[in-house]
Image: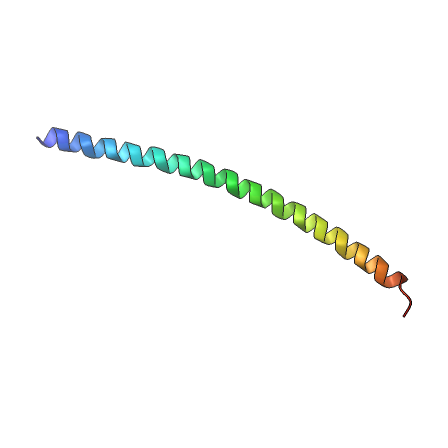
Amino acid sequence: MAGNYEKSIYNQLMDVMARLDSVEKSTSRKISGLKEEISDLKKENQELKEENKRLSEGAPQ
């Protein structure tokens, strides 16, 4: 009886670990995508700041 219980617990552990691996991979891909998006937005923000500065310098006071 104990052997079946131990095997059952082991199988449950393996199932949970497999699901955890899947979640980790998915999360890692999402984080990577968000970091790329943040990088793009930072670049766009910097370009807009530079354009705003140029426009402010050229505007009559």
